[in-house]
Length: 228
Image (tube, rainbow, N blue to C red; front, side, top):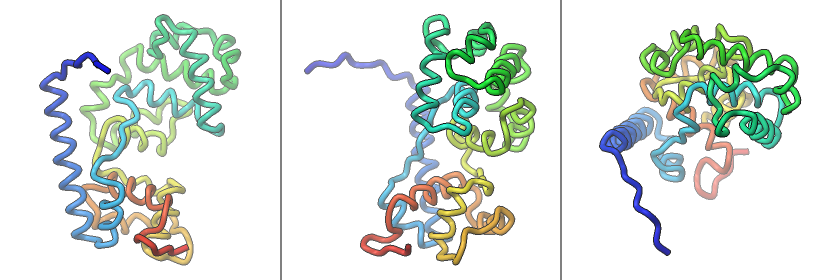
C-alpha cells in the first residue's frame, strides 16, 4: 500500500533530535546515580510520552477528567468538541459556549464554570502558550493555578507532558509514591515530604525518573523478580 510522504520541517527534526539527546543524557544520569534505573531504562526505552503540545487542550482535558474515568472523560470531550467550530477545542470556541450547553455535553455545573474560566484566561492573553513556554517551572505553576479547577498536580502534569520540562518531581502524585515504595523497597509509600530529598540526586532529570517510576508499577522491577 502506498502512503503519501509527509513533509517534515527542519524545526521538527531539530526538536526530535534535541529530545532524543536529552533522553539519552537523562538515562545515563539516572543509571549513574541509581543503578536500579538500569533495567527500567532497558525495558521502557529512552522516550517519555507527550500528550499534547497545546497547553489549553491539556488543561481542559485535566479539568474534564477530574473524578471520572478516562473513558468517561474522553466521551465528554468528544461531545464538547462536536459543539466547537470545525471540532477544534480552542479557548475562543469554549468561551463562546454557554454553561447549559457544556452541561448537556456531560460537564458538571462546577466543571462548566472552570472550563469557561480557563477559556477566558487564554482568550484574554493572561495565559498563552508562548508565555508558559518562557516561564520557569514554579512560575508556570503559580500562573495556571490561579484558574479554579487547576491545582499544583495538574500544573505539574502540564509541565511534564505538554511543556516537556525535564526536572519536575510531583511528590503529591500517588503513582509516584507507590512507584518509589517499590523501587526503593520501602515498607510503605513515602509521604510527599519524605520523597523530596529522594529526588535531589536525580536532578536535573526528575521528570524522567518520575516516568520510569510510574512505569515500574506495570511489572517486576527486574526480569523474573517481583518485589511485591
